[in-house]
Length: 205
Figure (tube, one colour):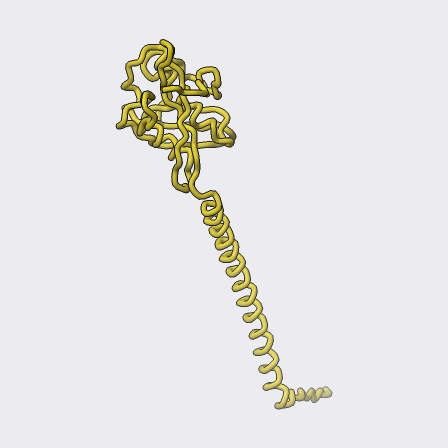
């Protein structure tokens, strides 16, 4: 039987370090590319967050102090209506809530009456799709003004909030829960829109 004499030629020694070098270069490039794109993504995220923060800060700075219209009760010629009182509030991310807090503080104009007890607090205010849902503390129901007076209290809240362009209607909650009325008279089972008919444009007192 004839034996085949197969001879395996070893790779030249000079190729081994070359292959190792090429492999190292490829790995370095791959790792470097990953680090490069990863850092770019992180940089873009940081830049985006910074831009958002700058825009918000600039918006507050440009707007400066904000003038808001608050509506208080005024009696004239034997009839009670709402009288607007313009007040300046500091720049804030929640101007609607700030306006309600000023409303609760009461009027500064002589002859006008507060609409809510001074200890009332705004527990929460959420505005979405034109609807403002305001959650007041239990003190808000401690009013004794009769049916028309209670209606004016409600319209005071509604008209103060709907003066802001993003608010079209208002829903009132007490301690996080829907209520039928504040003090037994005015229906609060549905959202309420602005009512200009209860506003007196001029106050002569």
